[in-house]
Length: 261
Image (cartoon, rainbow, N blue to C red):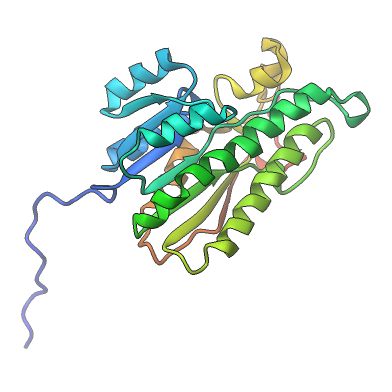
């Protein structure tokens, strides 16, 4: 009769990201900061990029990462950032945001331009700069933090939904263009995520910002999205998570949110 099953000897295991360098943009707060923290815990050598170096250096020190100034809307800043990197295996394009909630009839075109510049052009600018290194790594990852706003439109959200639709199309196009290269292209599209700054930056009023989440039982938090990002990036490299949509249970769709009380 066969004997009992044998198991490999227990001992320390190499973390999934060991030896890989991951760049995270918009890393000074919210999803970016949570993602940087999680990837560092997974063994990645994390490089943080953002404009607010005071926040960035504190986070970098706490998680054992490297902080570099980065403004994705500034070509010189992007060039300096890319030039400071010896290698890149993972790029998490997280920098972005929404800056108004106006209907199209009252569109602030300066806000539209800012939204597109940060979310789309800035993402293209950095991706273009780092793509040679990602290909040269032999197992690169480009991950876009999109939004359900890039899949479904809604009233008062045109500037942001237009930009995030652009990010979604960017990810789809890049995946087609890199089909014969050793680079995965991943998009994570969160729904309602409660962070310290997103809604406030959009409506510029604390009460209105809090009203976005009022009565919603357990909206997503930044760490939930970071968990999804880390999961996608730590799959075997032949597995490409093209698009992962993640919402809180209370949000069945863009317009269908259960609010208690």
